[in-house]
Image 1 (spheres, one colour):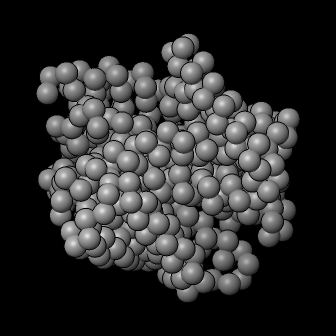
Image 2: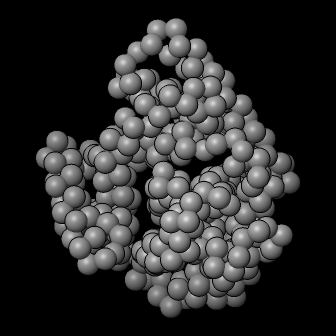
Length: 397
């Protein structure tokens, strides 16, 4: 496994460098590296590492979500709170429902199965979006209107909404949960409960740091450890209730910033250094989950379904932003920032196949295509439009 990690670091760094040299995001290079190194192409990654890759990916995601919370200020959240809720729920619902309708006719499957597919595809990827938004926040681009914070927070909410609806639909298919409305009611509960737990942990960590004054490196390690325990707590409660640990992780960073900006700044600096390694691990291992051969099986039908869903999502984002002060170019940036799919599709794309849904193989293939198509497209579009739209604002302020 040690050799595999060494290869991931070295080849991942090289691909990041090469893609940046040709004016493309390094993230795309790391995703492609993972695809080539993974079990479906050259099989260079130790199977033991592949088995625990979900844990490594979660730790990497925790690092960037903590950095996101440590960069999120209360006054910004107060300005964009209502918009976060709209952009975190409406676009995903639009996308999931449109895919449900389109897939029913294109794939000739039942509405329940097409709905399951819809909410596999509907989830955006915080793993792709959050790092870019944190970078914008740290460089103070889009800061005046809180655009990066808006997209950061809404991506987490969007993610939770899609996963909760998906789990409800899977429960209905298996005859375990006949009431979808009860599952939908879990969305606000899971987010609020996750935030409350994160706030409590944040306060406890603040008291601990104020009393014992550990070094910045130790503070960073303690914060990561506490956040990992929060995700464990989510898994422990999952049979009984859904708690959004992702929301809680962001809340931990937010509270530390609120209580002590100096401590938050020190912790954020240390997490920034850890992220150099975590980023490579995250995106290479996400790429390694992608089965290119399965993706080819879905063909044109899969591409049509994904494209239809993206149009619906774009309409949902635009409607969510209609009453805001954002101009048309800023709204366009928000639309393209909601394109990327990756971590959720890699994590749950194979669930329908595993539980015996007849069209499970097709669903997995379309989930894979959604990663291959939307992750690079979204990253390229965010970089291109972000520089033109938010870059100018950053220079003015």
